[in-house]
Amino acid sequence: MEVDCERLVALAKKVRLHTLDIVCRTRCPHIGPAFSCIELLVSLYFNTLKTCPEHPEDPERDRFIFSKGHACPALYSVLFERGFISRERMQGFAVNGGTMQQHPDYNLGCGIEFSTGSLGHGLSVGAGMAYALKKDNSPARVFVMLSDGELNEGSTWEAVLFAAHHKLNNLVLIIDYNRMQALGFTHDTLQLDPLAAKFEAFNWAPQTIDGHNFQAILSSLDLASREDSKPSVVIAETVKGKGVSFMENNLQWHYDCPNSDQYALACGEIE
Image (cartoon, rainbow, N blue to C red):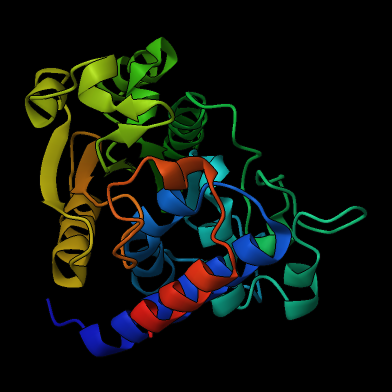
């Protein structure tokens, strides 16, 4: 498929700068996991999802659940660029009496379908939504983004079984597979590989891609959306802290916030 990669790359750069700005302004954590999923979010909101800020409650809209809610600065930045969130609302992020919290709260007007941050729930809710939409013969699809650490949760695998049993071909799971979680590497916590083979054994349609390559992302989402008998999973291999060299694959940036010198360095690298 033809993709305007230059436009998407430019959007990803703007989203990274927005994300960096609100994290540094409010001294909040989780910039590493936010940076790893930006290309995925840009691809969804500027190409794949059938949703728009003018009609956020359209019953035939595609649904998106951002299960890794701790990385919400990236989501808010994309929603801002897409027109769901105003600049004034963005200024109210993570401040007393503000408008946007450090985990997403349900607000259809802002494009947020479900309150997330308690990890391991997103796919269960998404599978339930997909089941209901399928029963109603709705053309709407459900997309869910998980962190790889959420694959440690038993509730996730219950949802995997449920979705396959009911042949929820209107459900697309995206795994931000940066191979790091809160306290270390995923393989030190629970070995997930071979991940695609696991999903295939559960009767899903898996794809493994470069999660920072727009051509690969959009091609995989297009293929997943045309699956006619199974739920789909896109295993997006990503880099935690992507875009800033001193943050990449560095667990420090799951929790830390850049100081003024690091902020300037990060801006220079992104720009």
